[in-house]
Length: 327
Image 1 (tube, rainbow, N blue to C red):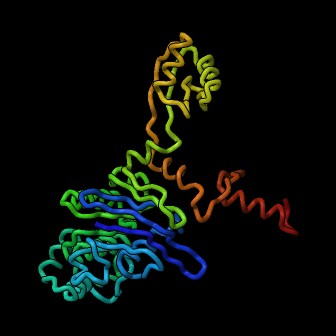
Image 2 (tube, helix red, strand yellow):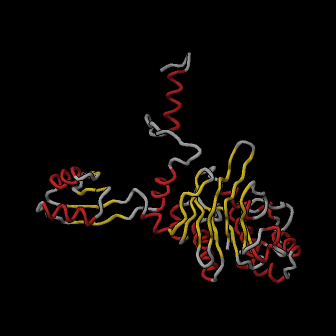
Image 3 (cartoon, helix red, strand yellow):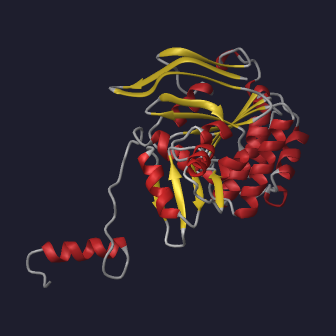
């Protein structure tokens, strides 16, 4: 189990983590989400004892990292897949780590087989692709058979088969009763991998909840409606405070009103309904809605012209404004 209480970390004038408190429970995959610059990587470094908090405390199984007698046996982490000595082989990298925590040699062979790197165990890791480095990082995290696991963007560089393998592995580790904490920018993948979420923005906690509750609580929930009296119903819904968009194919999407309320309003006015279906929002939509004020960098809308390429459109605007260039 991971417990953070009042965790704060500053770098000069920048507050990377701001009075952050949350729990990561065993037995489920917990996703760690937030925009760039939200403090996710700093929080993971604080958990692993790579940085020290200016205030607050974070513990692993009731103890801070520096108090763990055999750290690799209690917590494993993949924080940076490329943090490897390029001249070492995959086997030697893991064997070096194993010896620091009195882990037997056979365990090195076991984790290499588990992550699919047995055939390249004697190759130098400097020749590895990003996907292979990710697999080696996962092997290192699993080396001590720990009860707590941290993964920062574990599917970067992996092909679809590799992504599916990581998803299955994380869920299997959680079912074994381990604490699994995963940071990722891939919302669609998190939606089917994680059961719970810790969401942060600008170093502060935004939400700590289940995936289902997080999505259901977002403002983007809607209702799809079809009716032969669509315009009459749309007018009535707008008058009742709902937001309505009528599509060209003769359907209507309604926000700020539940499906039951739409049905009751239609019934009261004698309007026939051919479809009334709640639309479940996506994790990505919920994340964007609840973190839109916490993003470190927010781009403006892209105006596309010419051949449809945003880059080409920018080049043309520059051409028009540059002295000595023909329009």
